[in-house]
Structures are given as structure tokens and as C-alpha cells.
Length: 455
Image 1 (tube, rainbow, N blue to C red):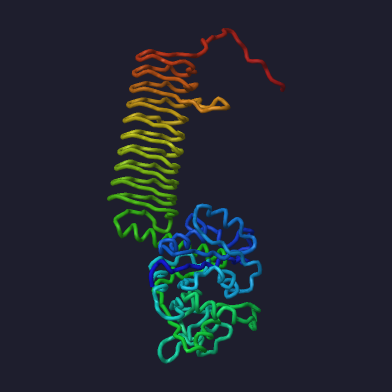
Image 2 (spheres, rainbow, N blue to C red):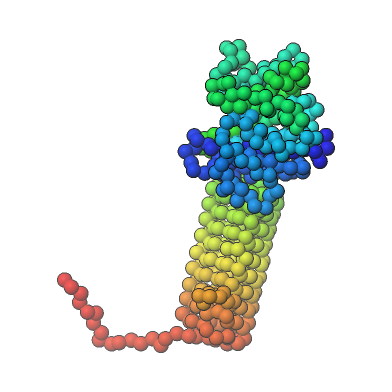
């Protein structure tokens, strides 16, 4: 089978009633992104001819969450079962295609498993798994040749059938031509009053067509989500697996059970990550980087031998080698720190470039700034970058010393080697090497008595 005639159909119309939530089940978040996003990412890696996603009548919120992904959205106005859901997409299938049917509440199915199942040549292939406790799952009943004779729901299974540990995952692959023949034959004469996709197994057997079981060796990738308890359990298992993979590659994660990866994390050698850190988007940690406890890092590059201290928040920024950030620091989008920069506690930096060896040790806001090398920013310094309409830039050149409690009213340029006296409000450019002081003259009143308040 070639990739050109493969189509994927994702059944994502579930309400998630057991979650008691107004958010569609497909939009509940796992590892930082919607459940459906995981499946779409894996399915798109197959390069299928088309991806069809069946959603419920309230699916506008799902569509709007994926504006840039080419998907054929199909609405199931009445929830009448899995077979009925595929029937809604059936008119959109190319008659020459092989169709891979995925369930929207099992988000971790890998691209490799999808590809292997889709590549099977049987008229109908069913993804199965072995479970020690298969209670509640449909059982795979095989014939003498090892093909699937029927799928029996747990409540309908005999005592002997309940001993079977091979279960149905709900994922199938078949030709569009066979689906066009089988799906219109489905009937709702069951306890649920629904058209069930599993009934096509009986139709295939009736036509003496092979129904092949394709066994997944990874229970995590076939685990479904129907409640928040199951979502939490899958989140925990997924995060532990990700942590174990990083541990195996040489990353020192202090406690793998208190580690949260919600995107992609690339690590060099001798990286240490303390407890309760969250990584989102795309994060790169260079050799020897140390991340303190409780840090939140999103879309960031942190170069070699830098230290991010406890409870710091980094978002869309670049930290140069041998720098220190935190504790309790915040680097906002557009921040670029060059080598050996020090950003201390309760310092916020936004859309600012800071040169080699410069430091802002505490209680400072630097926004829309360009700061040179070997600059010292005193405590309580702020760049007043917003005039109520526009943002303006503060430029501080090399070797400037800024005294504590200074306010720079942008746009303003501070020349190299200059000094700013503590408590100053700087509204004009300062030339190189100058001392700038802007503060009211101190006055002392002798023999002054504090007024007595009401007794």
C-alpha cells in the first residue's frame, strides 16, 4: 500500500460525560496540549491523503483550536455509536483508499503502530492489546486459523470468554470499498441502541473475509480516557516514561515523579533538573546546565553551564553560557542574555538584550531595552518603556553603573562608562563618562514634632 491512498478517520465526537465538563473530551489537555492534538500530530506524520475528524454538534471549539491543520471536519449531529460516526465520514472516503480508523480518546497511539496497522493487507485489521485485567473491555475471540471470529463486549461475554486477556482497542484498518459495503448494513439491535463499528467483524466473517488481529506491545499507546481519573493516570504514566527516557540518556532528574514535560526537551551532557519543573514548547539545555526547583520554562535556549535558580519563569528567551537567573526571576518573550549575565531575584526582563557580564541582581524591571557589557543595574531600577500609546527603547551602553531606585523614561540613551546616581529619574540622554543625578534636594527640619493622632 502506498502512502498516497491512505486516509485517516479520527472519531472525536465523544462528550466525556464522566468528566462532567463543558469542554469536549477531545479538547481536554494531556501533557500541555489537547488530546486530539496528540493524534493529529502522529497521524500527520503518516502523510495521508486526507485526515477526517468526526466531531459532535458542539465541535466549533475543536475546529477553532486547529486553524492551520488541513483536516476534513465531519459533524455527527446525533451520537448513535462508533459505526454511525464512521458513516458520517464515509461519503468523503476515496473508493480506492485504505482507511485507518482511530479513536479520539486514545491519544498516544504512535505513528509507527498506525503505519504498521495500515500496512496490513487483510480486508479488516483490528488493533488489539493484552491486559492482565481486561474487565470492561471487548474480548477478541479467534478462530482456529488465528483470525478474529468476533469481538464480544464484556457484559455479553461468557465465563470462558471473560478469561480472554486480548482486548479490542477500537482502532481498525480496512479498505474504503469494504467500509462502503459493511457500514450501511449495521443495525442498532443492542442494549445501547447504537450502530457499533465492531459489528463489521461479523459482517466480514459472514463474507468469509479475513479479520486480522494486530497486537500492540505498548499498553500506554492504547490506553483510553473517559474520566479525569483516567486522564490523570495517563498523564502520570506519560511523564514518568518521558523522565525515564531522559534519565537513560544521562540527564539527572532529581525526582522523575515530579517532572513535567509538555513539549520537546533537548539536553546536553551533565544537565541537572530539580523537582517540580515544567517544560513547554521547545526547550534546549546545553552541557552542564542546572535547573532549580519549581521552574517553568517555555520555548527557551539555555546555553552551557548556566544556572536557572529556583522558581524562575522563562518564556521565549535565550540565555547565554555561564549565566545565572533567579531565584524568582522572570524572563519574558524577546529576552536575550549574552554570556555570564546575572539576573537576580524578583527581576523581570522583557524584549531586552543584555551584554556580556552585565547584572541586575534584584527588584528590577527591564523592558524594551538594549544593555551593553559589564553594566551594573542597581536594585529597584525600571525602564519606563510605555507612554500609554507606544513602546520606547532604553539604551544603556557598556560599563554603565546604575544606582538603586533609578527610573529611565524612554526613549533615552545612557553613554558608555557613565554613572547614574541612586534615586534618579532620567529623562534625557547621558553622555559617555558623565555622572547623572536627578533627585529632589534633601531638607531637614529641626525641632520638628510629629503631630499626635487621636487617642
